[in-house]
Length: 145
Image (cartoon, rainbow, N blue to C red; front, side, top):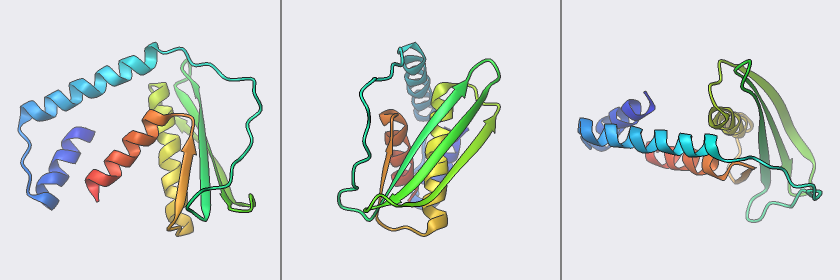
């Protein structure tokens, strides 16, 4: 659905026509990426993490997700801090019908973008533990702008 919607936006806003084969190839590559994510073993470091001041921005928004495969649910945690480390806003959202860990991380990243918009922020650093999710969100935003 995402690929079709993106193709439609490219047609409407950029005048670019995507043929069915291109859309099909994009979906196939995307599904392969999802398969790779599912196969990776996720580990946590025992080293304590310290919050770092945002570089080149006034606000830093951190996000993370928790995922329960058995119940197909996830939770998103999002927190915005200024350069002094003061909390500007935070939120936790529970999501239902979440099929994969990648989908859980994507929803958490989306909640981050919503918070950024709700706060009316211009210069923001977004940080999460899923580099692939952040890259996908950034590329989608750049494609649809």
